Image (cartoon, rainbow, N blue to C red; front, side):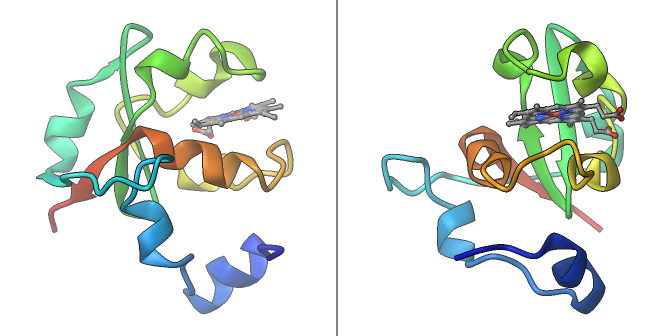
Amino acid sequence: MVLDWQQMLTDGRQPAISSLDSASDGAPKELQHFSLDEVGRHAAADDCWIVVRGRVYDVTSYVEEHPGGLLILKNAGGDATAGFHGPQHPPRVFDVIDDFLIGDLTQ
Ligand code: HEM
């Protein structure tokens, strides 16, 4: 399936929840709920959480692997949705990020 993110952002569609709530081995993950304040306490290269489309990802272990270098930290501890969906990212990164999912944002 080819994901058209510009279109998906416009009409609010999301990928199947099952792909987001499972680890790459298919095992269900226990998702927690976090406030934006809590996410903001993880804004360092050695402790980096980001929010993408209302979901919280702990990408700490990916910071040093990131092909775009330390620019991954641009919105560390905050909402990286717009940048994550930027043209620098090929669609396969939308699968890779699933591995780092830890929860979602409380309202
Ligand atoms: C082919 C692999 C990838 C390439 C070439 C790549 C490249 C880049 C580049 C060049 C930027 C900087 C964009 C700018 O100038 O603002 C960036 C930002 C970013 N990338 Fe990647 N990236 C890759 C994979 C990933 C993956 C797998 C993740 C998540 C696990 C990720 C997360 C991010 C985040 C969070 C930002 C910052 C977005 C923002 O806050 O504006 N990237 N990436």
